[in-house]
Image 1 (cartoon, rainbow, N blue to C red):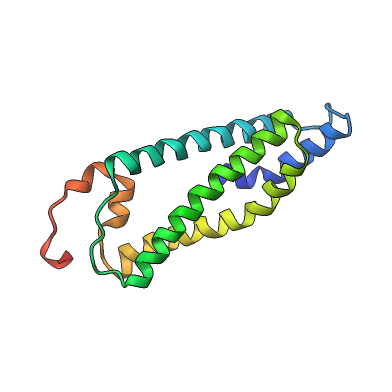
Image 2 (cartoon, rainbow, N blue to C red):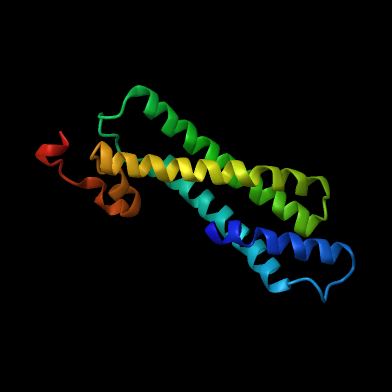
Length: 153
């Protein structure tokens, strides 16, 4: 996803050049990498949602205030929603030449980045401030079955 953010300006330049009929001026490598990267992110998000629904998610430690648990759940829903909508609007624009979807795609780029940062900050807060194992569980799902240490209780 980080590459997709970084390559966005190059993608816009390539898209504008292609719309103007100047395919030679368009950096097609950046454009193609952005398009296929977005498709990969869509499939990874779909796979992750499948795993969430059929395998479940790691249990919360219980140390989090109720408001933070709500915020975490809300952030997950918005993140997945934005990832899916951004991917689908990108696909519709690139492959279907649906012009209004580019406006939606561009408008949702910054909210996705903001929720991505909120997610990262939340995970770091859990790890370093609350001293839970949520970050470890996110990075290594196999550790879901860990034993709670005395200081984690």
